[in-house]
Amino acid sequence: MAILEIKHYPEPILRAEARIVPKVTATVRKLLDEMVQTMRAAEGVGLAAPQVGVSKRVIVVDVGEGLIELINPKIEKKEGSETAMEGCLSIPQYLGEVERAASVTVIGLNREGEEVRIAATGLLARALQHEIDHLNGILFIDRATVIYEKKPGQPEDGQIGEGEAPTKPSASETGGRDDSTGS
Ligand SMILES: [Zn+2]
Image (cartoon, rainbow, N blue to C red):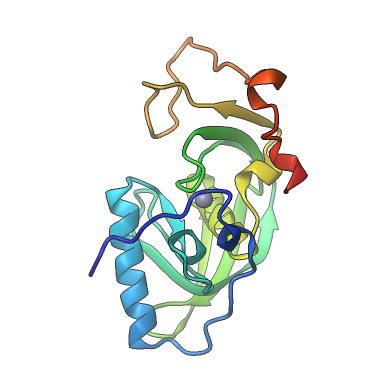
């Protein structure tokens, strides 16, 4: 097993549609193991295969409610909406406010190749939506209504110090880096 290299925006693989996994083989299980190890080493709550340079529909999520490993995940049902701050291991210097469904039901295959169905709310629902977006080449910066640049010394987990308003990057600071152009 190995810790894999996390690809950073704007690596093209992050914009590609990941391929369906036709069969859950030993290779896919090894990928899952390495993705879990990589997510834990990076102290992330989720990781999608394109983030480690593998164009396959495979995600891992652990928001502290137990590890979820899914192959070919699909959102079956969405309800409500909720806006919260989000970050991404592939875009480490930014955070954004993103509106997501408040609860989702996701279906996919587990590492045994069996179909599983997961009903999720809160952070787990958000993480699943974020990771499934990765499989379609969508990043949180595409959905964010506000994007914040992390200041050096700010905690990595995206927690912003109480009473300390994040500074919105000014147009000059972000000049030439307007993510919405998708270039
Ligand atoms: Zn991400």
